[in-house]
Length: 256
Image (cartoon, rainbow, N blue to C red; front, side):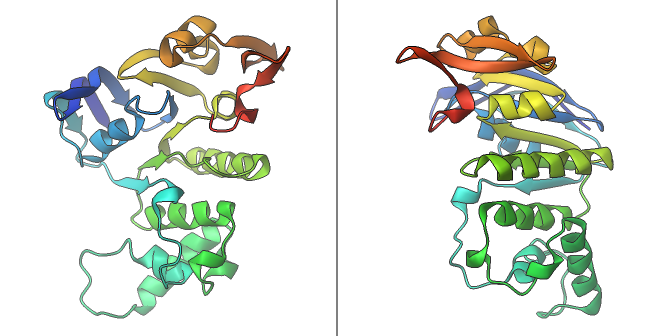
């Protein structure tokens, strides 16, 4: 679907991505992890086509259709629109009439039903919970019938239950044939839900299955700090270093 070869990006002469090689297939379900400022969002924007590399090449399939879900923190939730109106805003090209057609109403209803939020269609977006907000923007991205979904921090700022609900939803969408790439700080969440992980800090430090990529050595080179790796139910569990005499799971730390 997309091939990145030796891609390098910079802002004001400062490299943000360096020598990135990444092949995105139709069966992709990948979590990109790394510290703040490591280039995760820039990498998504390269795949999306809104950022051009200063070096290297990007090759896209002619059949590629991309849906993009930004960080919910960047959205103005006080903007006076309902859920259905927000979803339909994704349909900007090819519109002739300023009002919604019957077919467009049917499409919006269909995608909201697919995500289990059809009952929220007339509700104002500011009245939604964190999980509902995320589903609305996934619905908005799905309105264009993409075959690749890019998501920037979809589990940021939500509670544990909502985080698992979102990841289970993405797992269901992937099972239906949608390729998905997301960025996240939730190492243990992706270890238990996603089959492929990319550890990024300007360059790709490591990638593979969670067991292959989430090792103490790779994570130390990615984050610049030592982490402990345990195994539970056959999956790696990432722990921060000792804090006040005890080990704290990384996902329980604020700002992780």
